[in-house]
Length: 167
Image (cartoon, rainbow, N blue to C red):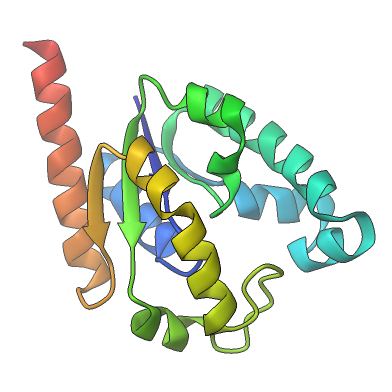
C-alpha cells in the first residue's frame, strides 16, 4: 500500500505524514529529504543547476519512494511531472491544503527557492490548485487543526479505503 501526500509548500506534508505513517505502522519517505541527503540542500541545487536539474533528481526520488511503498510525502512541485501524475494511479492520494495566513507563520525564514515569501507561495499554490485537486482522493485543510488530529483522520480514512478494497 502506498499513501501519497501532496500539496503546496508548508502545508504540513512532512510533519503530519510522519504521524500518519506511525499510526498505520508503515515506513515514511519524504522525497525532498531524500534529495537533500543524496545531493545537498535544495536551494543550492536550484542555484547551481537550476530548477530543471532539481526536477530530474526529484523524479528519481519519487520513483524510488513509490517503489518502496508506505507513506510518501512529495515536494510541492513533484506532481508537475506527467509521469509522476500517472504513477499515482493505484495510490491513495491525500491533498493537504492551508491558508496563506497559516502558511505565513510556517514559512518564517524559509529557504524554499520557489516560495521565499507569502506572495510567491500564494502564486504557486493558486497555479497548482486545480492539478492538486484532480489528483487527490482526499483533501484536508491543515491550517488550524492539530497535527495529531489530522493524522488520525487520514489514518482512519486510509483504513476505510483498505477495508473497501478487501470486500
